[in-house]
Image (cartoon, rainbow, N blue to C red; front, top):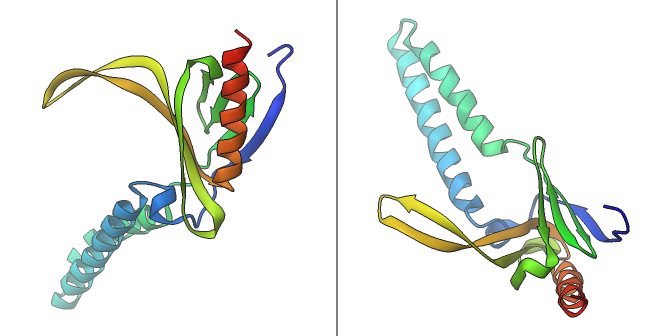
Length: 163
């Protein structure tokens, strides 16, 4: 935006471990399980003869895709006004003066995540009923999350004091 200054920019990294990408370890476990079973089934079906072994090939490919990830790289920026997240098809923006809490998690190889909560609420309906929850965002699997946390925290502080 006009007059906006870039304070930090980065992109999601690999190799941060489960702490950096919450849920990532479950997905890897599931992918290994899926791929192992698909290979076992395909080999067993192929040994018994016939073309049934071919039916397992798509499931093996799905397992490999799950294990390798979907290549969903994200690009992040912190300006003096907003936090920006860019993916292949979407640009999200959160104004700094709406951020109410900031946390960071450091994983392996100095890669981690910086998460934040806003003072906005969203309505959620699920099988447990309906409720409101705090809108949250984050910069996931970034290099040097402690420094990113410091930059974001300082920017939020400045934004709050300049209102």
